[in-house]
Every structure is written in C-alpha cells, then in structure tokens.
Image (cartoon, rainbow, N blue to C red):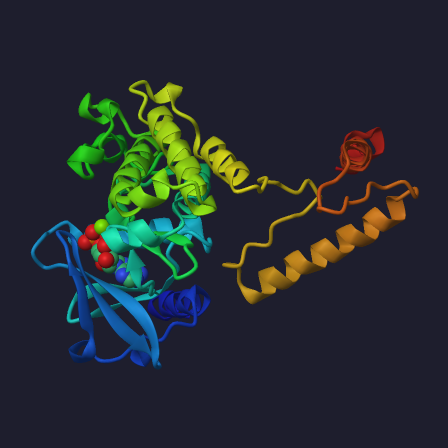
Length: 353
Ligand SMILES: Nc1ncnc2c1ncn2[C@@H]1O[C@H](COP(=O)(O)OP(=O)(O)O)[C@@H](O)[C@H]1O
Ligand SMILES: [Mg+2]
C-alpha cells in the first residue's frame, strides 16, 4: 500500500468515526439567516435536512478567527456531550472557510426578557454544572458572560463559545497566560498577568449572578414587596445569588468556591442533592472504533462474570436512591481490588511474567 493511500484511508476512517455528519445535508449558505456577527465569527441559523441548527463561521476580518474556531472544536470534542455544553454536530470547509455546525438554542441570557423570565437558580446551576465538567478536564473557558449562555425553553442553560478557552494540561504557557476575554468580566489576577486557572471562570460567574439580580429587580419589584409565595421565592433566590456573587468575586482566587461547591449549594437551594454513584462502573469511550467498543463490552461482560464468581453472597446493594451503603462499598469494591492486586503480585504471577 502506498503512503498516500494509507493516509487517505486513515482520514476516511476518522471521518467515519467523527459523527455521521454530512455537510451536503446542510442547507445552502444563501439560505442561512444571520444570528450574530461578532468579533471572531459569524453565526447563522440553518437547516440540516429540515432541522434547525446553528452554523458558526470563522470571520475573514480577523486573522486569528480560524485558529479560535479550531480551538473551539478541539475543546468541545474533549469535553464530550454534556447537558449544559453546546453540542457540536460536525465541521466542514466551504470556500476555504471553516464552519462548525452546532445544536441550535433559541434564547440567549443576554436578553433582558430571558434574564427576567427564566428560573435564575436553574440557569446558574446549569452553568456551574458545565464548569464542573470543563474544569475536570483542565479547561478554563475565560469568556463567561450572559452573551455566551443560551437558555432552552425549560431553562436548561447551554454554555457556548470556547474560542478563548485554554487547556491547562496541553496548551502552551503563553496562551494560558494571555490576557483575553471581556474586560469587565476579568478577575484581578488576570489583570496582574497571572496564568489562567478554574477560579477565573468562578469570578466571571459571580459577576453574572449580580447582573442577573439587577436585571430582575425592576421586573420583580412588585413580587419582592409582596407576601405571595412567588414574592418570597424570588427574594430567597436573589439572596442566594447575591451571596454566591460575593463569594465568587473574592479578590484572592483560592478564597473562591469551586464550581462543584457552587453547584451543590444551588442544588440544595432547589431541594435536590448532588449525588455521585459509587458503583464500580467503567467508562466506554464513545469515540472508539466499533471493534474497540465491542472489545470494551466483552471485557465488561467478562468482568461481570468474574465478579459473580467471586461473590460470596454479601455483596453491597444499591440503596433506593442509587447510592451504596457505606459498609457494602467498603466490603465489595475494595475487596475485589485487593484480590486482583494480590493475584498480580503473588510469587506464581511473578514467575509467570
Ligand atoms: N448554538 C447556537 N444556537 C443559537 N444561537 C447561537 C448559537 N451559538 C451562537 N449563537 C448566537 O451567536 C452569538 C455569538 O456566538 P459565539 O459562539 O459567542 O461567537 P463569538 O465568538 O463571535 O462571540 C451568541 O451570542 C448567540 O446569540
Ligand atoms: Mg461569544
């Protein structure tokens, strides 16, 4: 096989793995409707076989805009599907320009109407949830503001615009230390030239909270003074947002809460706890090739059989809400691991290897 044909088949293979997105299914550019013409990109409303989508196109006015869009694609792929992060469907090049096709969300938090009518706690909790995810990958958004938060009809918030983000693990130091983003949302440490860290996004989220309170004050002033249940709820919500804003905008980054702590507080306020399941689940990355996926599934089935064989009848059970009771977790999860470790380090195993 020649070098050329090998690299072509690799590209085709990767394209097949990417998503099943076909750019020819997207309506013609002449039919797109412009949604925004910002500094870095132009965003259009288009149709993918009749379904509404957003198309983000690098602008020709800025040399770095193609780079920013490429970065955005890289970060979105890394973050993967998440209920509060915009979903990319695919990317393509037309007339030499890079385009990114995204799930379309109609409302944006920058609109006063949306800010006043939404459930502010649910919206801010959604942004905090997105931050938990991106920060766990070492990604800092660096341009968090109402304009970059879309809001679905059920108040699910969607974080967009990763063109100025940075990856603390993979990007070079110059980019991580670069002063970027909207001036009034920048934290003091960025003005002092310190490199980005997750607390930077928390600061911007704090400013978003106080802005939301200001926007709602006029619209809900009669509610606020009223003794109705709505009025009381609005007052409670605004009090929480102001408290969060104060905590998030502390001048020392280490004094600010993490996105996880913020999410927990917001969820508790809504009467829900944030829970994580301790069950021994192993991840099957969806980006894998079909054969690798089948291998992963086979490994999982084999693991399940082995666990059943090893079981001595008192394996932990999941409680009603899905979380394990502590005793069970300590007994089963760790015991299996210990057995495996012992088997690996036994003299027989060492001799075999
Ligand atoms: N997926 C989307 N669905 C609907 N509107 C969008 C979408 N993505 C972007 N927009 C609109 O386009 C604007 C600019 O998009 P953004 O990604 O922030 O680009 P820029 O880098 O130019 O700021 C947003 O504020 C929003 O109004
Ligand atoms: Mg933007």
